[in-house]
Length: 289
Image (cartoon, rainbow, N blue to C red; front, top):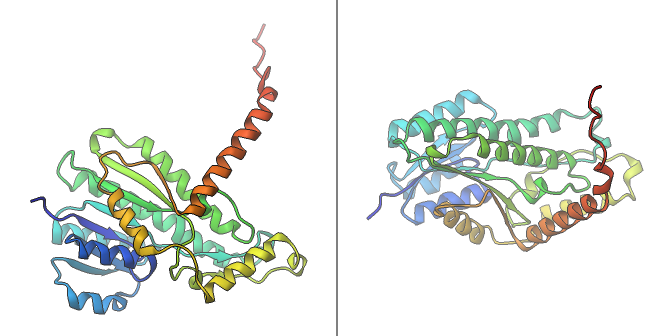
């Protein structure tokens, strides 16, 4: 019988992070559940011994806390199989409306991009240097369909997720295949989690009262009160299976709305490219005489 896998999960207090923690434990694996407020998992900790559930305080904006959490994982378990890099939140703001109010935007980048990046760096180093040679590990980057196509009122959130996509794609090409580290960017559509209620709202400029952004803004604020979308418990089951694939995909859109968005974006990109491909003809620099 194979040994249980050790999972390192960020943002384990709510949403996908909490659901993944509970699923990992139910499947007999080991969870290192990290979150800013460990007391939020008191009930779960009472049900599992420390050799199955290790709850650690971790604010991903703190590099020291990230280093300490990975060090504690090494001390207790001596290995790490899967990192579920999930901690994030959103800011609702039109691009122009944020002028002069950018503190909330910068704070979001610290969590969604820099926090995720620092966890990524620590995960890759652990997989390569702590795990036995060639064992490697799985890095599941929780992105979003918002990292594929921009949406009105979500431009800065889009920017954090686009940045995570680009960084992760580059990383996947940088690492040595012999390390056996597999990276997948999970791109969920709309799922019923606490994410909508955690959105930070920047007040809009009056000029946008009847612009397309106002429709999206109203929908997101409505979802905070009446969530709708896919079942996160079913989604994390798919994520769990994804971590077991010998050759997982780099991109993993999930949810019918995410699939539709990817197809629409791809078709539009190809259409624009093909329509104007001829404009790239004859742009070569003339040879020097």
